Image 1 (cartoon, rainbow, N blue to C red):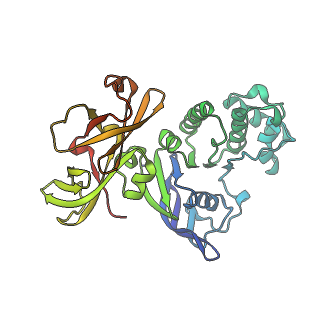
Image 2 (image 1 turned 30 degrees about the vertical axis):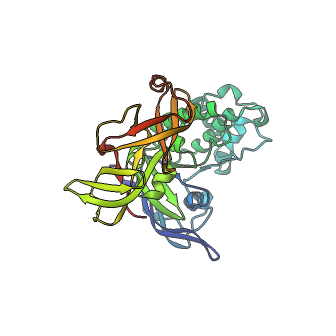
Image 3 (image 1 turned 90 degrees about the vertical axis):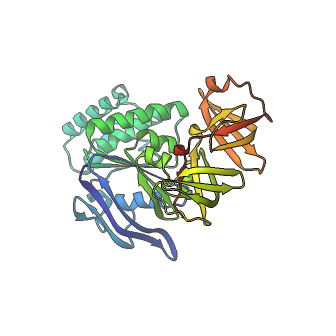
Length: 361
């Protein structure tokens, strides 16, 4: 495991009476790609701005390489920020934009030009070096903004929703550019986004924030398959969440009675008590469909409401007799075997091991 490059130590941020960030205690490892995500107003951008030096913590310390950074000015930090708006200078060429930070640091003209052209070449847009920014496409501007930050050769690069203004096909291409760059350079990337697909596609670890607090930190797989609590399970989406009363316990499983039926779940080290309520989650891609009632502990009869196609994947939205919504995600070629229409009744089922019991909170 790599050493921590950044440490947030009991960091809080308030604006008057409003608490934007309640208390952050986490580390950012050297050389990792860390994504911070959460709903609007959760504190993710404030966290990034504190790391960039654009906001000072109200309480606690932010340390970079062991040095307390609370009162260090943005231009004195090695933490360049790629803005959502890109913030390129429209009156400068692509090369001049990349050179700007070097010029502010007093780097001589010949070296500035050499380093700017090198990074424009790395970004695959060397031929646009002397073009005005206004003549470039969104994807080309994005690469100029990245080159402008990376030409400074920082230890850590901060990115604030940098792909949000791009078309869908450009987002996919830029995801590949960013991940390839990060692996090649070994620079720590801290990436704020509201997009689960971006975070899960690129990050080594993901921080989920809600109401100014960290709800969970983990690998994309851990967060998707084993959400820490109901907030994370709901935020990640494409999950089926059921709640009910614990009616039976064994050494490693529990029986939970819900309005949608009675189901068996693994306890996965969560303290469950007979007669108390509990919730569990099943990822939509781990749910099976069938025309006939399946054999096993976990089955629910539902009516098909609608379908959502994204490429070769389809998400089915269904409802049981109690009005509880279920989601199933599968390959379109598998769904085509069933010849289903809206309103058709089918059975859903899942393996006991596919369920994950949620902690309270």
